[in-house]
Length: 410
Image (cartoon, rainbow, N blue to C red; front, side, top):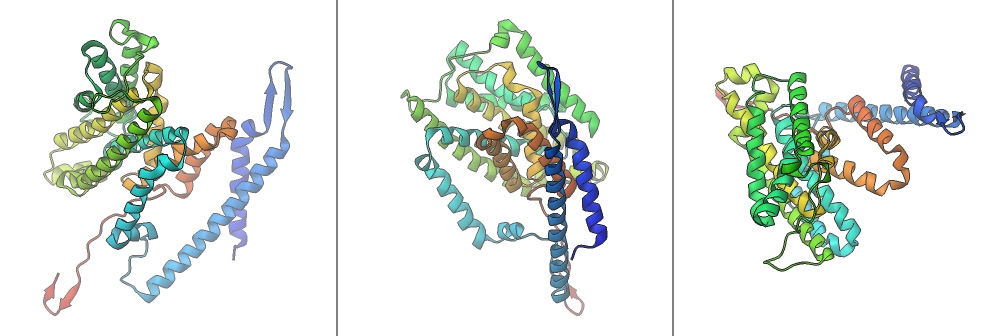
């Protein structure tokens, strides 16, 4: 039962949302006729919607608290905060069939939907890999990177320039782009070893803008704002593919890369290096006091994160056959960072869900394109207020000592 105090809080929340959305949802200026249209009905809809949503969230939270209290009363040793998705991920009997079903669906996806849908899904899979790459830097190592798109640009321009000047093909450019991006990651990592928090974010943001401005103004090197066109799509054993076949081919390349990325990042998470990243994220001073090499740990995080961005840059250049600096603005870094924050920092499954939500939803809600950025901001604000840990958060590992017999413990 909702108390009067809860109703009062929900009412205040609705008033706050009305205040925030008032300039956008209520006022509509017509600069041609120099008139202002007041859409008061929108204010009413926002107030009612936010009030009902707030009430629903409070009811769900109350039920969750009661359920956890009952579970704790029945079994005091049970883990009270472990959500259902974490139980599924922890149990191989559920995890492997689920992973197999998702892989099978991904393989037959092009035969169930048309080429346009396949192309959109390819883009979404690219952002899954980009999100997993940034998740290494931000989610696992705790290094706020706002210039991640720079490594994406390095990979894309590596393929475009190497192909234009030396005729290097896609498969040879893929590892070269990854290595060049990793090198740039190390170049960025060295000057920021002593920085963290907001200062690190500002420096990485500046690095991303420097790369974009160099590409935009160095015409002899990158052809400036005109960009590079006629970048070849990947061929199959030297065979030139048609447009539809190339889209299908790139889609399956992306499925393979997503599987490889998930496997590698998962193994890294459980490795000695992954535990060092998590220790660095939790407390940098304590991490250093425990004997962990901070320099090596930070540089490997930047380099490995940039590696995936470089590979995706090569795929992006091959997919679009045209690149220019406008494709690598700060907005791209913000979207990739939002994928990690929305999905859950440090969570592999969370990043995948976050990428699919943020990339696929705008495509399928083109009818509401005028309100896309408003909805985007509202989702992030709601997530920060009600679920700051993300859609699927990671569970902090805990270890318990149980006494088996008198005098013996494990």
